[in-house]
Amino acid sequence: MSDFSRLSLNSATTKMWTLAEVVEGCVAAGIPAIGPWRDRVAEAGLDKAGRLIRDAELRVSSLCRGGFLTAPDAEGQAAALADNRAAILEAAALGANDLFLVVGGLAPGEKDVVSARQRVADRLGDLVPFAAENGVRLVLEPLHPMYAADRALISTLGQALDLASPFDTASVGVAVDTFHVWWDPELKAQIERAGRENRIASYQVCDFTMPIAADPLLSRGYMGDGVVDFGTIGTWVRDAGYTGDIEVEIFNQDIWNTDGNTVIATVKERYAELVLPFA
Amino acid sequence: MSDFSRLSLNSATTKMWTLAEVVEGCVAAGIPAIGPWRDRVAEAGLDKAGRLIRDAELRVSSLCRGGFLTAPDAEGQAAALADNRAAILEAAALGANDLFLVVGGLAPGEKDVVSARQRVADRLGDLVPFAAENGVRLVLEPLHPMYAADRALISTLGQALDLASPFDTASVGVAVDTFHVWWDPELKAQIERAGRENRIASYQVCDFTMPIAADPLLSRGYMGDGVVDFGTIGTWVRDAGYTGDIEVEIFNQDIWNTDGNTVIATVKERYAELVLPFA
Image (tube, rainbow over all chains, first blue to last red; front, side, top):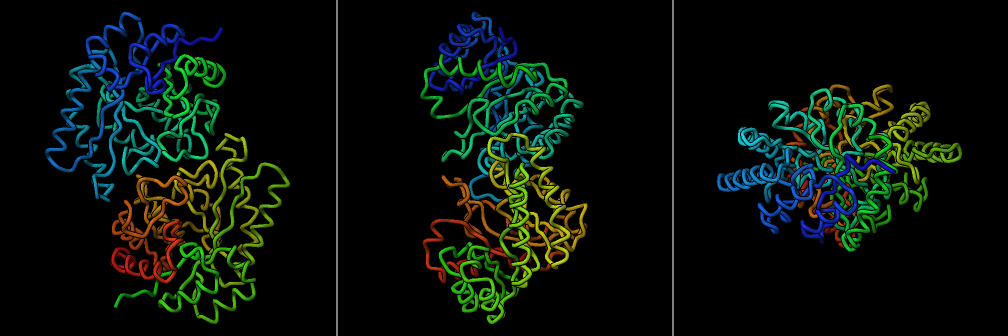
């Protein structure tokens, strides 16, 4: 019998399910933690979402997601801060210690990545005190560089750690998502650094499938279906001292078209085979 | 009148043209240098290709390309070395000082990027003496991380410089291709380092268009059509001391479907507007 005590299901993996269905699916499968997306929480209503999760005695490994902090104008920045403050409050209400931030890409027509990254740092500084007051850690997620232009100008773990460094470790952490970082030649060194600096807030697993899907957002796959070396990366993350939840987050049209309980069964099988031995 | 004295046309930009047509197109447009691909050279025949280029008094800014050095077995390694030695001889015969290497990705079914990268380093060590004997510099090209699995396990300029460092600067250099490296948070520092270490062998310009094309190899565009900040990157490359040819290499189905002379006219126009002021 495999030990699923650290496994968490990100709700995007069973994207067609309502939050209630995800909760029910996790309970039925003996998965003790959930990583909900805000749209599914909003659909259920925040109070009811919290109740559903608490009644099921699930941990909330993270809330996805805040971010999109790169607006260049005052109005856009105010809107981004308001949305992220709302996300922080939602995380607190759900009992999620960690709020993922996908920090955003270039503004429309913009080409100045240096300035856009500075705006991420500035908005992060704006948000940290509010996050700290509410007991929520902001989790900087480096995304694969193919998403740099439109989704996240944080492309490497090292860069995420640099951005996090001015802030308290209780308020800003980083995520290691195998899909996004497997290719990074600095990955081992930066995971070690993340451990030393006490920044690893989340370890997410999913595979990088080839060829890349026509919609590159959907090129994620079950562990084992792509090129990611879960043994090596998992060992690095374990040796860096991470003992938290391991969240499975897969965006994949074929998986979304599959019955959620079947998806969960495959997730558990692949987790037991490829992730757990190194956790 | 703009100064096109450093402009080079990579033959892949006018992919439908034979080498003779590319040469003719460059001469007609006053472009003084060419970066041929080996398939077009082979089609023309090496001797005739050399003659065509010499008779037209074009410089050969580079030959594309060798590489694919990651075979795990002795037979595959021997084949890769033989092919790369042939490419070195072709470069020498054409008067190309620089041979681009796209180093290759994971072997079929392989997931161990650390070992695969070590094989790149090992094969590079095998090739350098032969390249040096023939007066050819091997140019390590970092490719965008979306090609790490299947084309190039060199994903950043810093990694290329690390790989180059054991070898003489006359024998191993690096390429800065805006398409591949624009997103790198370390780019400024690594271009400065490449200048200090005398490793910049080539500066290639082309844009990164969004959304990414369904075939991600074809997501390249004319300068100005994507997200690349040519002013900033061009200034970094210039300040690093690079004074060589600036090669335009665009893979894009729409551009390939356009008449070559029209493509060249657009290349010149964009080069004059976006690249030349910072060269």
